[in-house]
Length: 131
Image (cartoon, rainbow, N blue to C red; front, side):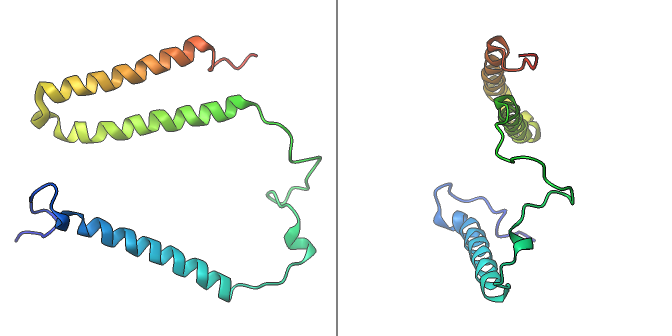
């Protein structure tokens, strides 16, 4: 028994993109239907309680618009960057035998570029919290 989606065809064949297009259209349609349904079915009354800030039941103190150290954002961006790097390792781990030395060298180059970026970040002092 062969599955339609697993059959190999020409890379540029439009039928290969049909499942992706259908999934994308379904996702966009579902999101649109939920937003429109929420707009029609949801309550439209605004009260003072609904307009107040709520943080885990704790009364707010001071102004919420205080500046936050840029280091928090930098750590978040670095986390996302290296998380995406790990995601790109998965296809290589699955297909490393078929890719051979050419695939291995591509991964070494990929890791080298990320390692160079990490060394640059480290030398710039972006990971120092004392300052």
